[in-house]
Image (tube, rainbow, N blue to C red):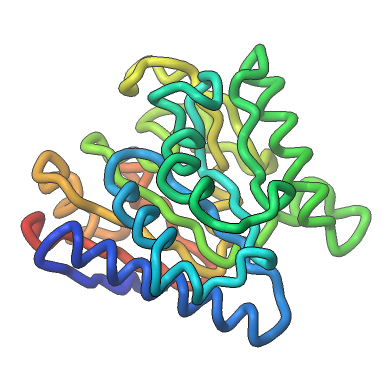
Length: 247
């Protein structure tokens, strides 16, 4: 599906637009009596978005009892660590809203070894998204309502890095990666491309001048496989919300 690209004058404008978009999807799910499954991203860019979602008018537009939060990736650190994606989301969003604790499905990234953490999170997802048929335990990937993603200056997204073997996983839902080239350089747990690409909607948030070159390369040549972010081609909608200072 062709990407929808929207640019905004600032990170604040981008974050407000993303908050409006997310609340719109949540309201549709609520009207239809469905759960709203949202995959959160880490990094610096979504922090302001999460702060907005925790405030009026956005917070009151989302039925948090019917909303389930997941993570696209996590650093293998304690959940209260400064560099933890969960900690950032908890500080800016989760601690400020009335969401049941059972609706917050964090990655148990402190579990050792990382492969055990990945296996544990995959089991969490499989229990939440049961297979349509018993013989589809490997191929019946979950379909999240919305996956939020960021973009690294090397073209990585979630914790899928250029050249990593996890990019080629076809049956696993969750993978452990070494994270040697990442910052911080710690092992990580990530959703795999087949899971991300089964989403009903994927929304990239891109801000920061250091990402200009890779963003241009991806948007000018969406068929490229040089960058993990370019390999995100969901079954549903694909949107890029971009700080216009990058284009």
